[in-house]
Length: 130
Ligand SMILES: O=c1ccn([C@@H]2O[C@H](COP(=O)(O)OP(=O)(O)O[C@H]3O[C@H](CO)[C@H](O)[C@H](O)[C@H]3O)[C@@H](O)[C@H]2O)c(=O)[nH]1
Image 1 (cartoon, rainbow, N blue to C red):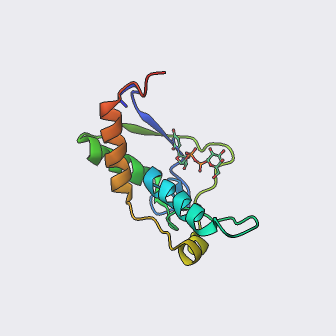
Image 2: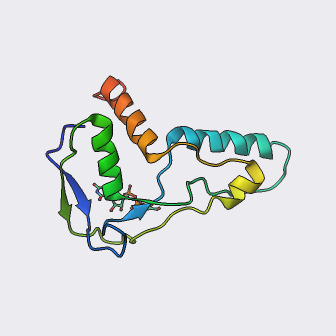
Image 3: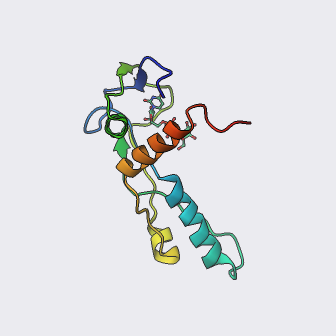
């Protein structure tokens, strides 16, 4: 954070509400909880079981930039850059099976993700030491 002059947003002419790409973002603690729920549920079930862990809806790149601006208390500078080769306009997970079989669903918002990331980053500006 603070190392780049500006964030490149890859594409602002997608067929999405604000023109930027939409993705399903998940808080790392929700993701960890999903793994724990799977391990508890599957400990006595044979076979391979596959679950999507996601919110089931997306946020745009601008939503993410705005959430981080709010979290850090100042505007995150951005500029629009060309679309990245191979990027799709929008996609998100279908976590229905995880909800039905693991009784798991996300409970943390994009705002929580930005706040917690900013808190961690503020405490560890250079990341963890090797
Ligand atoms: O500097 C950046 C980085 C990302 N984005 C945008 O942010 C969104 C998320 O980008 P990511 O690269 O984090 O994730 P993607 O879902 O686009 O792609 C990732 O997940 C895919 C599968 O879901 C593939 O594995 C792919 O190789 C991997 O990069 C996209 O709209 C992307 O265009 C920007 O605008 N600027």
